[in-house]
Image: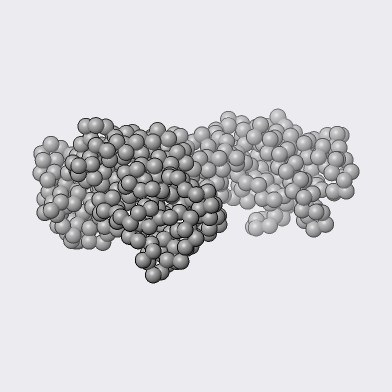
Length: 561
């Protein structure tokens, strides 16, 4: 969220009347350096003599004066030159260990060790490089690289904006339009419909087009659909273009733009030998048409279309302006996607473990999510007879039973401060004392188990009347485990691994119907506050020797069976 808030503030800086490119790039660099924990940073932009350093932050005055104004060319001797040569992000963990690096005098003056440099891309070429440095050997994490990459994209947008505003004949009008678009993004970063509508309206007006629309990839269907438009057209035309499934092909402007992944400019559609979508031309009466792909990492996530009803080619500056608007649409979509990813992960974590969701907003929470070791009490609850029930019951009945079961046991576990690690069909795993510390986590886990047993007994009595014969076994163990975030980008959970988890699972496997088995250490830590009784040592799957276990003593009355 700090990244998105920072980008919103920076986009508002671009919209100011006193817009100064060097100051804006310096501000972008300052934010990026702060967010990724770097010590310094700089931006080099394309100039006639090469790539010139335009903004420097976090460096001593003497070093900054020596560094600012330096020029770079593609080559392997410098990190910036290497980015320009390879056209990709370069991450050097320690420049002193890099055999190709040649700026030893500059390194000694600046003291930097780890360097991350990201290209600022426009139309597939680097128009600049954003670099961040650490004065220690500490490689940047993947998430930090993503942050710097996002800031480089916005810095490229700022640079392109400055170039466009340099045209004195149309500077005022274009500045107002770009300010409106960027202002809309900064004020409504997560209202994508509003942003795209503002973008297409400005694009059509400034290019003197008659109509324009934005298509976006629908990831579910794999088709491109209209999501914003501006201009007056025949309703029949609108109905046709919004119900056409566009795919890469040469017979339509949109298809050709998707296929070529570069702007497609048809000066007179009636003279184009490959065009086949004549019904839309008849209804729209367009003659000159321009399609610009909305590219993310080289893949078209959408198409930007503007057309005129007369034959008049779009100028190079109009093409550059429309390309800028298309890129702004991509940045808006990326911002929303990033926000939705964060919110989805928050929702996923909150659904499985409310305590974990709160960690995302704290520095200590990030460390916990990265992985740590702690004593926990693990609880497993496992349905008996579920497989036979699922084989004979209707799917709707099975899902209804699982919903009731998960609700009952989940509420009981959360009420005692437990963290639900996962639901696995008929099974449930909960651990206590992480991420929220519990001073008496063994007792909390056993109280949760007793409550789960009681809630299950009520459900079992009602299920039995419906012909469902189900039982429940519960296992509880205490010990040390490694806990943290597990999964992959877009689908994270919070879990633990260790022998304590395996032991609790094995105890639930061998527990009788509605029996709560606890490990010997867990029974000792209860100190008779919750009575238990020893059982004969048990042979458990995967265990090298018999295990001493105890059963929680609970009166049999009121089982509901």
